[in-house]
Image 1 (cartoon, rainbow, N blue to C red):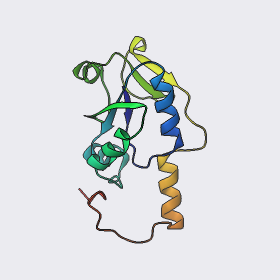
Image 2 (image 1 turned 45 degrees about the horizontal axis):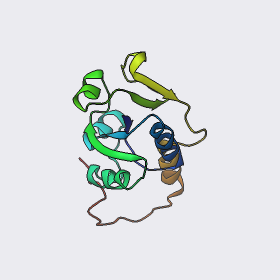
Image 3 (image 1 turned 90 degrees about the vertical axis):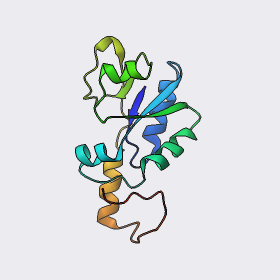
Amino acid sequence: MVDMSVILLHHGHIRLLRKAAKYGEVVVGLSTDKDIEKYKGHTPLLTWECRKEILESIRYVSAVVEVPYIITEAVLDEHGVQFLVHGDDNFNTISEDRLIILPRTPAISSSMLLAYNRRVKIIPYATDSDCVAQRL
C-alpha cells in the first residue's frame, strides 16, 4: 500500500507509485477529506471521489481504498496488503518489517505548490464543478 492524500497531484507522486510498482500490485490508501482537514488544516481542493478517479487512471495503481490519515498495521491487514511504501517523511506506526521507505522527490510537495498558489493566486476564481470540495 502507498498512502496518499493527493491534494494536488505532482511528479513526486508518480515517481513514488512507479517505484512502488516494482514491489508488486499498488493499492493506494487515500486519506478522507475530513482527515485531511483535521491533520493538514485545510479542505482538499478536490473531493475524495475525484481524487480516487485521478489515481485509478494511473497505470501503476491497481486499486484505491479509503484509509485514515494515520496508517496502522490493522489498516494494512484490513486491506490484505503486506507492506506500506512511503517517502522518507514517514510518520506512520508500522513495524520495520512491513515498511518500505523510498527517498522523496526533492524540492516538490503538494503543500509547497498550494502555498505558492495562495501567494501568487494562479487560480483566482471559483468554480461550480462537482469535483471541487466544499468546506466541511
